[in-house]
Length: 266
Image (cartoon, rainbow, N blue to C red):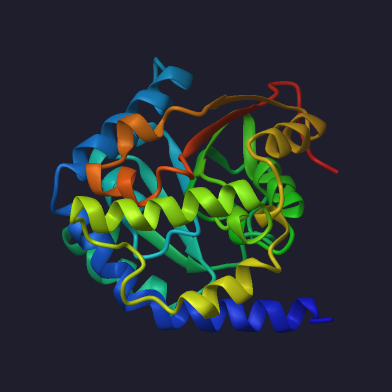
């Protein structure tokens, strides 16, 4: 049986090699209408939690920032942004992609499951397509809750990625998506990626087998957070190409708020 250290090493190596290609995806998003689409959703969600506060008054932590898509959008809107990723190559790409906003973002190499911040540090945490890939997602949620201020907001955009490795129905949906990509003549998002390597990692990830966001709700409620899920967020944030590529695996939004009376997480 593979150890956690082996899993961590393989995972880091994969994303190190994937950084340049993934950065191109983020650049495309930043230079398209997706920039405005995602910015509108983030601003809407944060303003709902903090209707009386301006962006410059709020500290936001982007966890698993990758090549910096969320970080750049948030910095441009005026938020105080700290961005962390476990991979140096991703942070390098993020810094390059930040351009004129580079000095407004604090980029740090950090493990999402072992954050090096004090308790009650941030007003908002954002993350996209990260949780599914973590070896100890429950531990990560505990850390994220710990560094949020009481009343702080967590926005987690994710999906049941790679459930098709375990579930027959999900596998059939995945294969149907591949057929639709060809039929519709859109780009295959997996082109240029090492699918066997990613599947070898994903099959070991605990959340590949979980049913989400139900799993997340149980964990977050045990942590004392109030959670709601939006299983239709994909309709707002995905392009036509993304919808065709991932029809069987729709993105959801997990929105969780730390209880105001909660001073620390044990």
